[in-house]
Length: 46
Image (tube, rainbow, N blue to C red; front, side, top):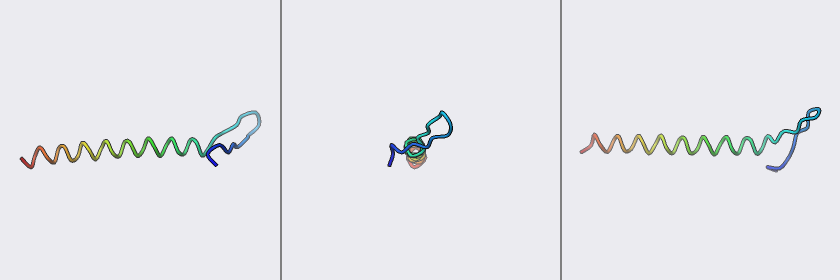
């Protein structure tokens, strides 16, 4: 399914691959933000 292509004229698009990469980057960004949040919270707790 990730390999499915959508052809428009001469161009081929890979919407599932693009969506998966987008979600992975969003997930890593979220994890980074949460890590920073908890580090900051830990600093204020002590």
